[in-house]
Length: 253
Image (cartoon, rainbow, N blue to C red; front, side):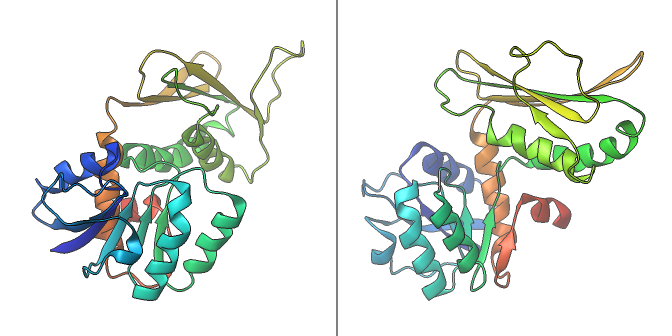
């Protein structure tokens, strides 16, 4: 049984993960950390990670950027691996994450969905076939009307996975409205749609002469990210120091 600390336990994702873990016989949450310390899920809740005195095999983090520095210090001191899901980290914090990974296992990924990360692997194989055959590559991502950034980090991660197979030769094209010209051969178009309460939809299009191949992933709830984080936690427990991502979790399946 993997023992986990849920960092940010009383937030939306923290509670989503808590409910999913309650139905999983291979992992349990032994403590939570949240400024709002009410025990909503049956385990003890501490106001800060420094106050937590419960032993664990892994920390699953869905908190906020302000709490990440203290989390990394704790993880290194106590030698507890971290699944780091908090976004919006500064360059200084990202550097600290890299430094901490030299001393403890850390898993960080642009998207925690098992589906998205399996898709990345499929896209690499598809790119090897279709790019050389002259297919154009476009990505369309859709999210709710409250999302601040565009394009999504996941869309960029998908583009990066494709481009890595192309020796990073391709440029990313975000806007075609400012110039009248034909599409360049070595570019990946990325389009962002914002509307309603769309949780997340990513579509990758390989368009060739007389045929189009489309890969599409749709998230119908944020539970997909919670499930991925749980699988990452089970994978990371007991791992040596280093930087891991969801591709490592997929490869271990």
